[in-house]
Length: 290
Image (cartoon, rainbow, N blue to C red; front, side, top):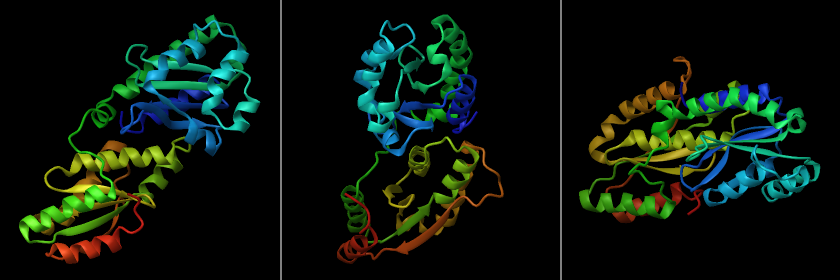
């Protein structure tokens, strides 16, 4: 069981329930909400819009759960605000299931399946077959560790720049900025698991890098599936070692082929004076939104 487990179990559950349109939503890394991690048959607008704030969950489960007394028209109306206009116009019914029922960590949303018109007893039997695997997939050590609290916060460009400059001023040494390109890993994962949401896959990778760095190194998310990592001057000689370690961790957590090239990178040495380093950072990070 690794970080691909939620996507794999969604595919198996969707196959069993003959889901033509649906999604697996997991707790977001940086928001108190549930967002799409894997999907089937949903348009891009729906995948971006489909986010359930945690405080809305009791109401949603009440309206869309298996035990709900609402009819199909009411179910469609309850989920419509979270879908694209096209998807909501074609919707006949919906089913939302929380796993586990107490303190949910995952939601299975079914928007199109022949079983939506079946009896609740029939659907209940099928769901009993997928509920435990979904919970197990989320309870494996790799997934659980990635979603527990961390002292590593996700920085914006301003915060990242400020910390880098403070370190340079304090030590009078520049250090290095290392750009990690995660697109090859994401391409490999989505080729193996087409139902994985690539944006969420990047979030998993980014969070994994943050947790692995430790020490004084820290990271900034950049466009085009890249991450900028600041490596202080005192440890710059260990950049190759750091990259090898990050590659090994990613391989292990996603169970990737040892022959797969994990990280390509670009290395920029920063000036040891804050004024010059500021100019470098402004240029290097020009495409990163604050």
